[in-house]
Length: 399
Image 1 (spheres, helix red, strand yellow):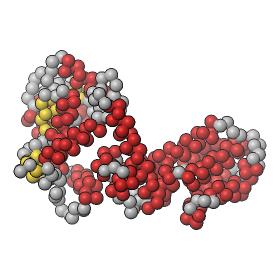
Image 2: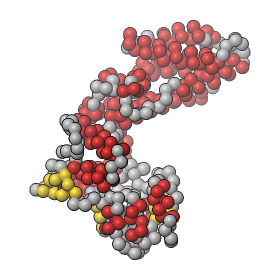
Image 3: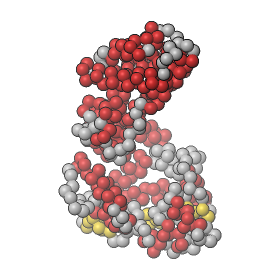
């Protein structure tokens, strides 16, 4: 496999290296056709039959995801098919990805990139990329509806097109042409279960996909919590989860995506704790004490929380934008302290906003010290000390 200058890594970092090379080319302004050719160079030496089998395995898993199909597109394709139209897929992708999709939606034609094959293996070359201006050369039909996500170059070559895409330039191109039907760009909806293509065993596949993703996320949390982001590899996560590395990549594009998902789950769990304390209807100072105490227990016992905290410390080493820490937590504490202040449960000289910042800073600093010194075994005691020092009324149970 060869894309360009530089030394490719071993199997572990191959995916990230290839993706990074392609993104860098695109960022430098390379033509889409050239980036497309570079992509297929990565397949040099791969077995054609094995790649086709992997493509079908990928599609089987992907189609089980409720968000995989765009509901409006699926309904439109079903309508055309019911009216007797022949469906065709036009894409810069290649047969291993497109053939199972075509079979699934009932497309009769697939116009796509055709990598050169020699002795049953990809040569890393393309006869002609089907991307940019190239799709237009493949399409000269007056009465077909084409659904094209590859670019605006195909619009003049078809009958009344319908663009369903978030890219504004497609809609602009379509509006410049007469008798074009344009559906405005909109957030991608979840598919209508009544119209979206489904396999008979979609429910089982969805459950399996959700279960696998959960296994991978839990394994990533364990790895990040115990070893830290820099030293963990995707292979480490796969082995901990008991799945293949390909299964990890199906759900997460790279190690950074894993870290982001773990961090998001960390803040989701903190949010659940806060909501449960709120729903308990406790007096404000008791709610503050309960929030910090329950969070301390989560830091002591929950691997996902431990991983999220460590990732925030290592955020400068992670090539992804993690959620901004502490803001929501501080806002919750501030709200309860304001209520306590207004009810006369805090001295008039106390500033609820400043006190909340001090409490949150002390808590997260204490959990870090407790982790380093005692593996968080004493974190509950450290929380009681913080409450006694900063908000004695909360520690004493007064409300």
